[in-house]
Image 1 (cartoon, rainbow, N blue to C red):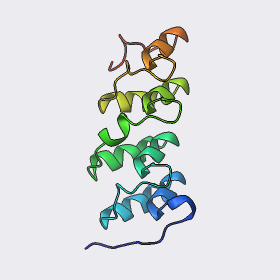
Image 2 (cartoon, helix red, strand yellow):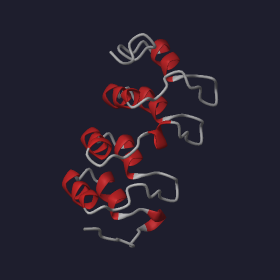
Image 3 (cartoon, helix red, strand yellow):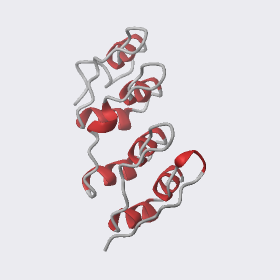
Length: 138
């Protein structure tokens, strides 16, 4: 069975975006079970998976990727207006769990931002354990 939800909120966010941002795993799972389009981007170019990562909802991000086959490659290389990848943003935020998830999905810790800094170099400079070039993936 497939449902079509055409309603969008301010800034082009769908029901999936809103339930993801609110951290409600059950409604996210229900919407995905009924084949809602999980690739829809809001006016900022952000998908529900991107929102889950930015809002630190590890279980929702993992569920979208594993259970509903959301391809994380679409967001891994995406940069924000400062030239920073999601991995870079998570390293800056000291979010090891999301950093590790992104790395496991194929995020590259050596991609430079607009100032020629990488997630790995930031981790080394700030002395974050388990976030240096040698430790990513362990």
